[in-house]
Length: 187
View 1 (cartoon, rainbow, N blue to C red):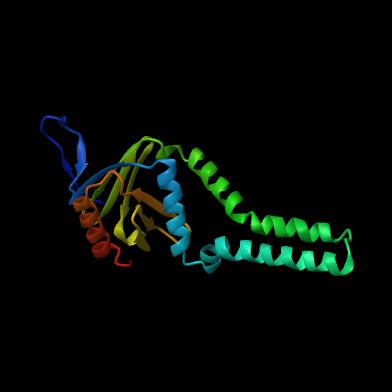
View 2: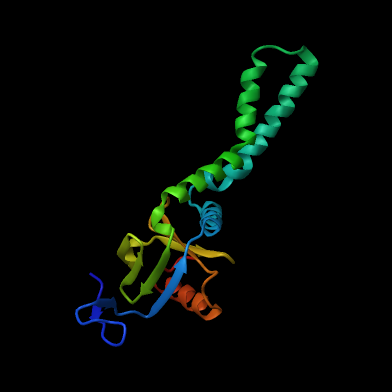
């Protein structure tokens, strides 16, 4: 259980609670932020197929197109080439349908479509937003990565939470990075 303290003052009402935090960050995940975080998550995924799919599938498709073109020139058109062409087209188009899938995923993830906040302390972090109030201990996170656009915090090899940097000051980004390094430990 994460520690909480009673919040009092101008904005707090008696009985409301806030996390005894080391840091507070307000942010919002736009579709662009989500897609950039997806790109980072794919680049850093522990699953090699996820890391290389965006590159290898189109290359394999292009190689199949060359192979099919040579076969057509050498042997003429045959009906079974259609199946090879469909597979080659599917492989070449992988980045396009993958991006479409990511956009649909963002559209369905309503909890990202509004203001969110992140509070951290020595025990974990709390993410709140429209329909979200989640407290997680640091031990529930496997690792984190960052690029110039965002942080991604992994709970497992397939589940991560994006935190865009665009609404943070340079000081907040540095503090959050240090907090993650200290508590999650993998970069």
